[in-house]
Figure (cartoon, rainbow, N blue to C red):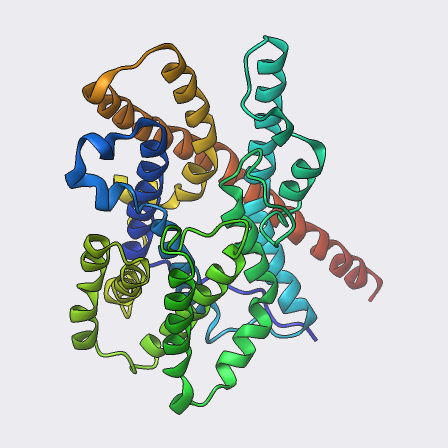
Length: 365
């Protein structure tokens, strides 16, 4: 006998808004790589040059949010697990696939127009297929190719596949041993960050899966600690200071510790229903996935501009602002007109396919 379909827990508006700040941090980091604004404005360097840590915030938040959604309603059994994976697939894959195909068309047009493409062998079929099936960050390649930010999506998909087993283990873990999970996870993060001081935690295709696994487990454990009243807010406030301190000291693991404290501090025990008229930050937080995947198209336009002119510091700062706003607009459009409709269509199609046999059986009765 199958239970009712899983009903998503109410989304916490504060955590959704946090997604906007995290994706904004990531986009500013990527904009600074070609524009080098942080070199001319060194006061901004600690923030701009470590924006890749916004991805670590997403990994922590992913584990935390999945505990809130499934900790008390785990996806048990084959039907429950398949329903969970279908929902995850319907959310992330359509926009990912469309962005990848659109990028392939863009590369093809650029080649046909005779434009110079840096390292054109990056855009080969093997790398395309690895990304299409979301296995490009499973130690399968060392080359950043095509829509290279999708490495984070690849490790997230690995986490979704492992989630039912990891959740089952975490639920069965005695309360006395639960604090050991984030402590061991942070020990792993410190060790990973110390492996190469020049890299910090900025591992992607190589060791990105380990980076994700440690932070995903920390987020899950923090979710259970929070919902079971084992994580006093008075303890989290001083830990939050690790976020700016880590940026100043250029110690990535310390910054991640601060991010881990921020997430449960923002969480409301009884989140209010989403407002009928959503504010801008809430909408952009919902669109963060689209912003992340569409960045590569903004980057392509930025590269073309920089090939033609050297705008100076003021011009580069202006291009950073323009690129940031363009990323938000493109991401929101992708979310509004691709991600959400595709997700609804796939889930509605699944529901229709499941209902058809039920009607047939009822007709034979």
